[in-house]
Image (cartoon, rainbow, N blue to C red; front, side, top):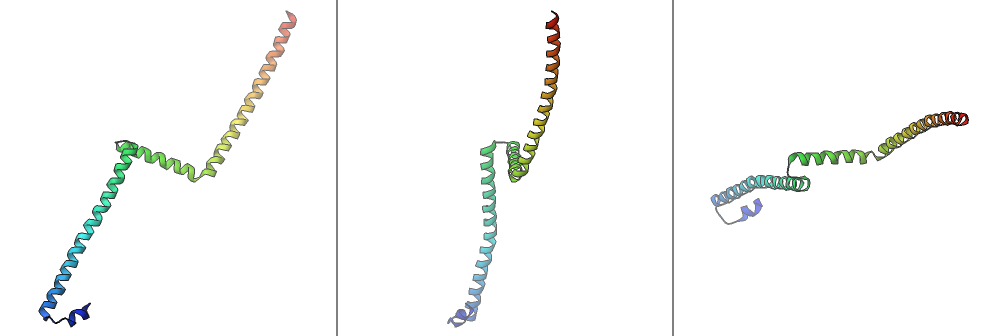
Length: 123
């Protein structure tokens, strides 16, 4: 680009003014670009916030509660095999406890049946 400017049939002062003017335009464009980008970023964040607010309620607490619920669901889904293993262990423990209670109940019923048979035999 500088070679093109050198070949122009204009004075050195005019060339300097052109370079200075283009520099000023470039600086102004850069100075306007940064806030423009930031405004786009803020607009996107605000739209996201409004969407979350619309979906999960108008209060910040409702949005935060929804976020916490999603986080818990992701933790459970992220470790699905571990969660299934824990649940299977809980089922097995409950099954063993029920069998123990059933054996105790059966013993009590048999004892009650024997006593009832003795009373019925006497009476």
